[in-house]
Image 1: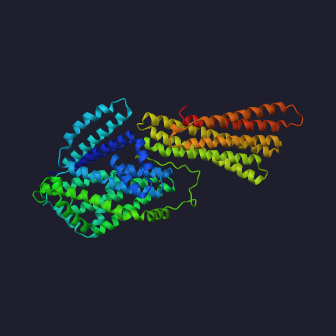
Image 2: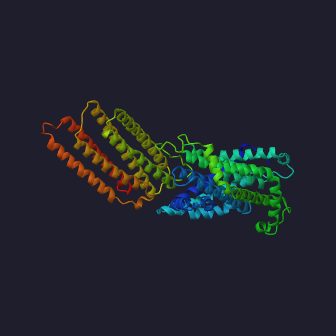
Length: 572
């Protein structure tokens, strides 16, 4: 059989079909069961052992270890998971991804998958046009599964049989017996293939197909599988690049775990494959009836796919069992490898969002909510700086507070831009109605927080001019403004608490409304008193105007604070 550009294009097209089907299937189940997946990751990670099961279960459901690891990194980034918890999840994800290899080896080469895809389309397409959101997403999952089957079927047919006497096979066998150097070379090839296709499952599908068609000796394929385990860590590393130091450390734990595992297995690979091959052959009747290895070439190659799937599972399972007691050491190593630039903590005013393109908006909203609460906390600090500026008598302290308020106003502007761009990126994807409402709430909250920061900046310029012009408040005016700042601080506490509530459905606005009523009442009282005293000879008009400007500005801040809570409960 001739093998030219057209045949290469057929293989690449089949692989693209497989990857697209896996992506559609993974995103469909994430949309259909997004809240359940969030709960699994957040609530079933009490210790590293339960975390392993959680990672396994999540990856088995979404059929993508990359999605699980990126999800985990994003949750660590948002402060929802600790590094120890994330380590367990990622270890479990490595075991969960081996299920794909078994599905391919057991079903992919024995039956006509394209024949089974047609009934799946018959089920999935009507669901896709359903008006009910979840049915639609389950339809996406079913169609994705059908496309995955078709891609695997086309891939199997696109790769020609090589035959046992082929010179290329003999050359590959020569490399396989070349010792640790050749094993490391094929580990590198496996890693590069995974980095290129950005899916360890797709790389595994290619490797199994090449084994079945006789292109790869078993030892070579096993080394490539080890490389695929390293290649899959790149996805988490890329996701963490724009995250905080904790996200980078979480991704580094995943990389360390896989690299250390590959290191010890490369040394033991010939021995492991020898005994594992014998074990699988003894139980071959479970897969192939009573067909024994060696009866014909197809049976040998089919059995080799089982051996490779068994090796993939054995390696990841053993690596978890060996490395699980050393999780604290992995965490310490990751901390040492990724030191904090600001000592023990990152700069607290930094935005912590990361690009979670591997997961759906339904899952990304978890970290976005956490980030919005962080944004609210950052803006609320400006109240303390403005209050200090009002009461400070030391000129250095006054200059320091003016600089801080200016800095935080710029930070607030940057945060709003980044959150808006992040939400816009999510909005380009298909979104459930509930998620759409939540994203709109985040946009409204960000807008109000940025306006609060602007008002504080304008207020600081007013106080700066007051200081420069040597205009003084009376003790009563100063006390009244301090009281107003106290009410604003209380309103901020309620606002930040509401933003930090995991489920916005549980937020009540009664406390926020009461705080707003108190702010308005004090503003009305101060305005009335200020107007009544303007006729007094000893009442400074310039002082009164600045005084009026400040308590009116604080009342406007109160309006935006209540707007934030109204956005949280879905009223704006």
